[in-house]
Image (cartoon, rainbow, N blue to C red):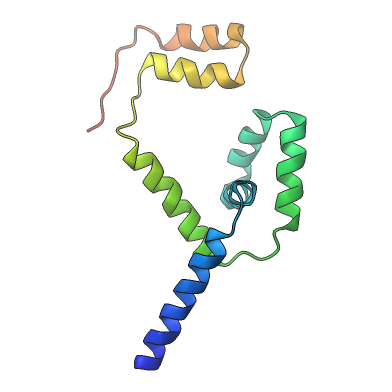
Length: 123
């Protein structure tokens, strides 16, 4: 039984070392590859061509990525989002997000539809 524990500890250490050596671009590539195609496509549509080329080049060079590294990356992402405080879902936050990816006329049209419909708070 002690041998199995040592092997497990060694594997976890190897994964931590491998994860620690990933660049930000490699983490972004792994994250994109972990998404459903529709969600990844939505993000690509928000990027400039040079960003897409850089990211997809990194994606194409990743090779096989251990499932535990993917899990570690997604857990890190979730932890960062959960420690940054509560998410605020309101018209201002929504408008800021939309403005990052759409022209002002489209943002205005979308926001016009949702303004005045009240707010909902999740606890």
